[in-house]
Image 1 (spheres, rainbow, N blue to C red):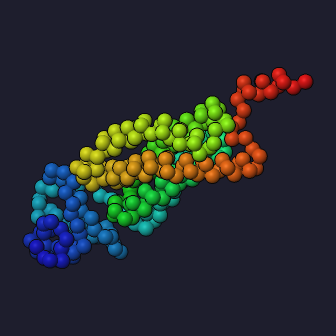
Image 2: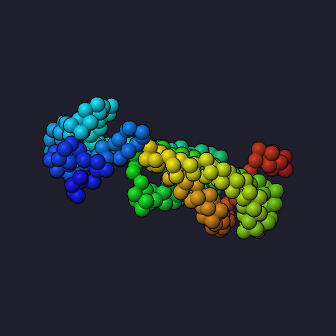
Image 3: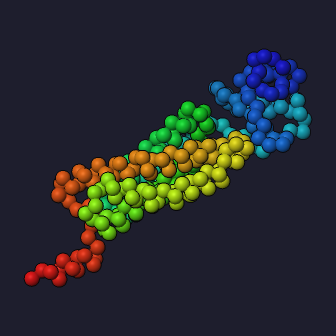
Length: 262
């Protein structure tokens, strides 16, 4: 096999150079199944035809169930669709948080989720994981998983705020995190274990989903404790300085206030 050929086996008798396919790379994706990647230049259809001819000269019974050509225009459209999907998912989560919690709770959760996403996108770059449709699914799943973690902690914070409104905010946050820590860790650990075999032995077919999700679970769980809660503390202090209440009054509290009015 020529040294300039990166394939695990030559294409035809003369190898990659004879077919002008020195940049072709073959990856085994299953028993008897291979994925061939080739940079497409001008006249991509001719390159594909030459590649098929080279494969058939080495293996006459070879079949080509799928041929994809991705150019700059397709890549640009995929990027735009990815950004749109993430923005729509993030906007929906933001509306949900803003409806369910007070503004400083929602803002703390949203900022933390954005940080989780940027860290995971950085993981794609550093780890060299292919960014494809499966990777987009991983990012969207990570948004939902991260929101769930923050909602569990913030629900307990809000509950404790109603039970002990005079308690210092820092002590109240510590108590709320301690009360939900076991549940958060067990949930994250079980999800991590479920994804671990996919990440280790799933191969390239699921790597773009499993590996970012494994990283995202670690990031999302730690950010719920070490980032979201401190952000909530500082935003709560800012709200106090503005003279605003930490929580919206419940219907029962509003009725009591109305009963006290002359």
